[in-house]
Image 1 (tube, helix red, strand yellow):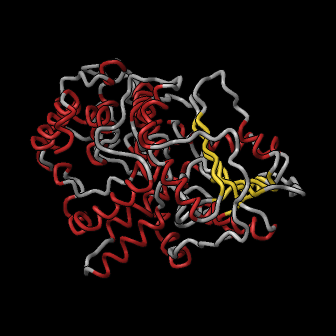
Image 2 (spheres, helix red, strand yellow):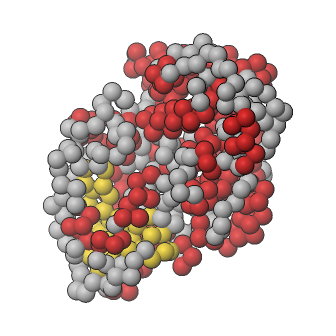
Image 3 (cartoon, rainbow, N blue to C red):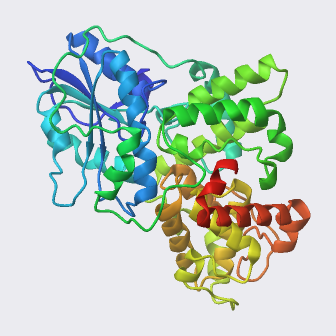
Length: 469
């Protein structure tokens, strides 16, 4: 466990104190959570209870109804599971920009120490850089996102083939269930006054009270929370794992896991998914290697990348060959060229690209293989590569439930050559891999996908059709 932990300051443990505080920034779950396990262990040593703090603010970039709803849908079950374990819980919803923004510090003022999530992107990365010096108690960050801890790979890896042997060597040590210590001291203190009570029936009202973008509705396909994550995993194992290797690149076959939103918000862990897939494959005489390659090697390559670069959304992080070839073709004519509004509203000449964007707008996620095509075309139809990059990042930030994630940035930059190799040279792309409409038609069922997204668009206009979708 120690290799998952980093101390980000040298402050002493506060004594006396009322509790050990776990700040759930990115891993919004009770089960299979190494950071919570560390907090419980520290609390047991100090003979203190544990308080879990989870916040949702109105000020994160592109805050909107979709993201807020997805997070809030997980709160009631988190509260139930923590209560069953004798752990305190404070969920705070900051609704207005004028509301207090110091709840963490108020809770930390009575804590012996603070444990939180080690995460290389989004708001957690910024908090973990700025808060430790101001907190006055030990500030421990714990990696509960990766199976092989990020700390075990101390330098940047440049491709799957370089990180794969290192992960495979370490995997037997880490592909084991998360420790599950029991709190020695049960929580019996009053619920902090900052707590926001969340129940399924009051979520729409809570979202409506928040000073956020209300123009982006909740996903038509994905509900948030631990129970939804567990149901999605069960459905994948029972119905899709046996088809994954053969059909994963065929969107209309629905053979992928759809777990990326739950992984991003920490409602389920990669470790428990991997253990469940491995067990299911052994019991049913299946081969899960292709799925585990994506879940472990490719995903942890993304975390390694995000950990070791200053800005994960930057073209300067591309390999030299990719930067060079894109620069050589920077002045190549582009036709058509679309502005960001046209991309956002799915108003291009290409029906497949428009369908991909509409899937993002409605579901909050694009099928992984088609997202590659989506990104390649934004490069082809943008004035510059920088414009294309900014468009892709913005659309993910605004609409994607699995956006702002290490995987988001590596998948976007893969379109520009990250973690890839040179291909045959052509206009605009140079030696960057190209993807075209005719190639997608040869390899996948484009027509079936277009019909499915058209049905989804009709669902938006007629919500009663969602029940049978």
